[in-house]
Image 1 (cartoon, helix red, strand yellow):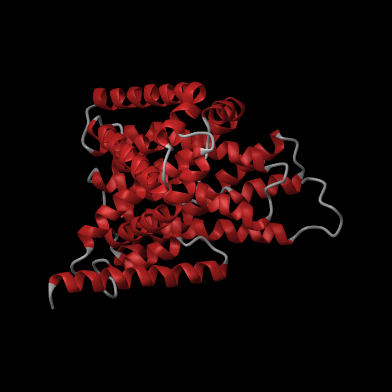
Image 2: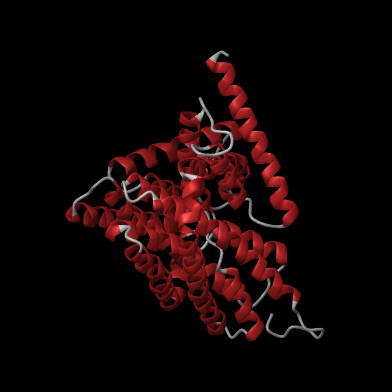
Length: 387
């Protein structure tokens, strides 16, 4: 069979399989992320139907998926919102970082991943899935609840923390020296600070210049700028993902809604490809060997994340039910845990990191939404005053 024919057949089959998996996830009212990971496991080496010709194409698509995920994340916030959220959420945010990175770091050291592998596993367990949680809050009708602003502010803090952590982890991934790692962290801090100030003062004006003309021109302009900034950031060992995130923050005003409409289909496609590619890189036969570690790590980190959520709900005056909702909704990990694990594999750490990350995301991305729905269904007959 001609190589081009085989490539198109493989890619078409993969995309259709993703559509089926997405439908199943929607029917079960769950995030599609675990289903895409399982799909990747099925077509990777050691899977049921290993791909032959399309892995290189999927790898490039996966890199674009990471960039688009972070670009869209940046579009969710204005500079002023980020500054306000960080100020109000710092105590809970710092506690979240310590309590939820610690289980991963300790587990990594105990299972022999080494200091570098343990650091990456700490990043995997730290950050909740903004995408899963935002969709869950919307699906359950929790938008107007008292605890929801506190939960969203905590997610913003985590996203900003990730923008600082990714350059450090990226520098480690390419074998950077301690001085190089410190320089990357400093560069990321300066870049984020600069974008926040410029965005707060001149974001609307810059957005009007970029977003003028047809949707086609706007899409090409935004993608071109994002890829160039991501490339420059990668060249400076700051992380392409952080560069894309900063571009998203810089877009403001009416341009944000137009950018979301243009980019959402591309983001959904390439994000799915990213999760599939990570699954391809993971040997499915390694999952049973790490199952006990994944279950223990999931249980401990679910408890620590729930503790942080309970505190966040209490700080805004929420009752017991509001605190319970904040506690369970934060349990799910997803896209950014996989991104961090991917950096770890790039750094050449123990391949078990990939298997642990896949199992961990599969577990928490399902357990979190299920727990949230259980809490939601146990409403008392009278009006819930904690809303």
